[in-house]
Length: 229
Image 1: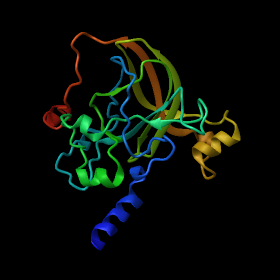
Image 2: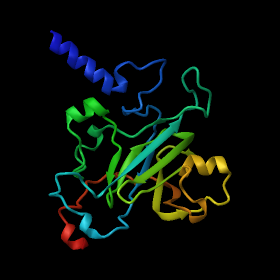
Image 3: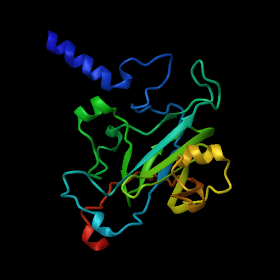
């Protein structure tokens, strides 16, 4: 009995979603969008590095991956937040991508400790994330932790029924020299030289109508790795 109590205590310490408060969505858990009408974010970030990153036998960690968080500013946020003052990630759960074949799926124990939200994605593989329909504000964050390159952007979009948002991301150097000092400190910290810019990403978006019968496909990165070298 004491062992079960100790295990439960440890899990609650590591798991933010044990006791959600005031309608606030636990940030390490996925949140299923209820207001989607065939709307998705469709994205595929191409590997701008060399092809030796395709190493399916690397069991320490998969280096052909990046972190991506999609946050939604709900029109009716929970108390005590006001509109535009509260956002939370809407990345799907690991279960959503169980047939993706990208070799990035976490086991159930890792999900229990760290949350079930999918945060890491494979370069050169297209992913879909369900979006709420209508007019909404989102924050997009991409981080290639291996190359210390990251960027985020906040944008508004109005998605009609059965339309999706196509996101294209490519490496770029962000020039913060014209930004206010407070923004430079927030993004780069005190030890960064804003005149040198910041290794980041540029984002391009396009709203497109879904093709009839179109479905999200599996990845084939490792099966065809030799053809990409």
